Length: 301
Ligand code: SF4
Image 1 (tube, rainbow, N blue to C red):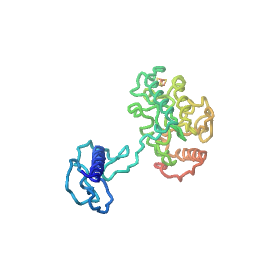
Image 2: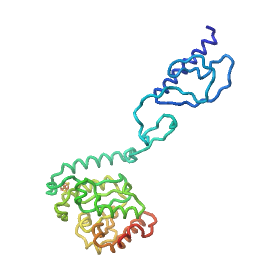
Image 3: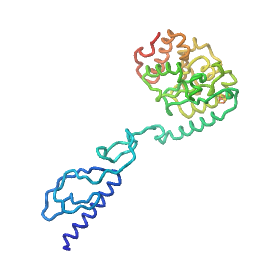
Image 4: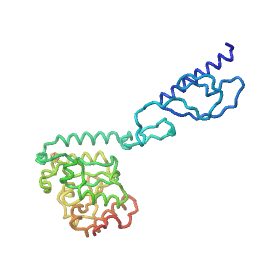
């Protein structure tokens, strides 16, 4: 074999190996640039795929490199960069931005730890009739933290805060403010449902408050919206009635607190939505955001 042929054979061998590696990675099609035909040079189509094929003389722009390999179905929206036909440069989709942020890994760990402690808690009598504990959920570095009094039946059933009718109205309030539920955090003073939806007793709120304190300390919300008289009392202690206090900035360990009516009260008294909207506009103003027009919250008002 001449030296020239030996060099060419080496190149072909390297190409074959490269193509086989691509095939193993799931690549079905490789775009190639047409090369000028060189007298004596082996054409690219001579690259065997997947088995050595000799004697081809034309060089296609797109060369099939492998027979289809049975692979598990890919997710519709790939979570990672996928090297596949027609999708060679798909950016990874980040489904957990907070968890992916190293600065928030500690917060996520604390929330996880706290949820476990709440689930095991037997400190007050509310543990006896609960179905699920409801520690709260949302963004790990929220601008706003909404705090209610305690879970109701729907929340107890699902283990999530504010998912019943009151929760739907709260969602409307959040959307009307220009936020989503994923951008804020929602929790309650008590993490277990009081029987028959009664108000939590002072001793129950006192027993549960350390969990909420830890959540607030870890989450560092820019401000808190306290929903209803019981939440205000649990958070700030004895104060004026909610009808007098609402709309007035208060303070919880250096964090501004805006007391306003509970969504359950608004379901019974829709006209009070106007007052709540005024309170939420004050919240937006404090955050330096433009308060949207009175829109989504006015249903039924
Ligand atoms: S309400 Fe709070 S303190 Fe009482 S049992 Fe549940 S988690 Fe524990």
